[in-house]
Image (cartoon, rainbow, N blue to C red; front, side):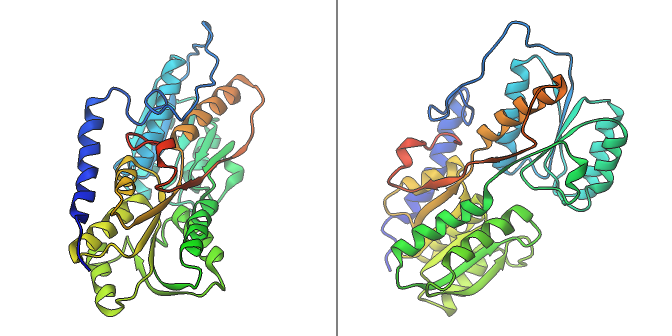
Length: 331
């Protein structure tokens, strides 16, 4: 199989990054024309509130854009936000939440590193009278939070599977790149597997992205040396997919369909290239999630009405409808 310029495809990723660096509000509602602004601004909107935002990993583009979206909405209301990155460490997150309690924040937006280990921190927040809006991954003890706002991760995996079954109606051999320690990724992969069940597909290799000693790229190259006829690779998130795409580029394979859940500018840039093996994305919208979280927080603190459980829509982005969403920001 010839490369046919697959290397150029991945170079598009860097082009998007360079272009984005020159734009003022990349990845924000202002930069993304697809996201409609519906917020009503009032002169007396400012409140004397301090918020906290705690997430597992700000190097993950999803959590970064989610933070930016929440922060922008709060800034428009005149409210500051204390941001902490747990760097994938549950103990670090617990310490950072205690710091927020000590600073007497009014509300915490929480994306937990570990849904179970976070319980002690939630109890401490409850005792301090600080409400919690749980974002992304649902905590184990839901009664200790005031609202949950998350992506429909199961559907994000399902829509990828639906496209695969249309492109490969006879079934085929699959590789799954997953992360059993990540609750959200688990739901996505489960949604995908349930949708391909009994449709002629065989999973020949599962790659744990967090525990592989040799790395995703080496694992992909290994499985391709053992199983040449791989039909598709499903990835739990964008970052996994970029590693898979690099491995396929290295070995000159563009005949394998690649799917993932996310929708970052980098992955959409690769999808835009006609020679790319990237087939589609189960897309999330951290921009809409952040805006929804900020509105919910304002209602909660004001004593207004709010939904205590919101599932933000996920949908399929393919090469055919990519123009609707663009490649220069999240949706």
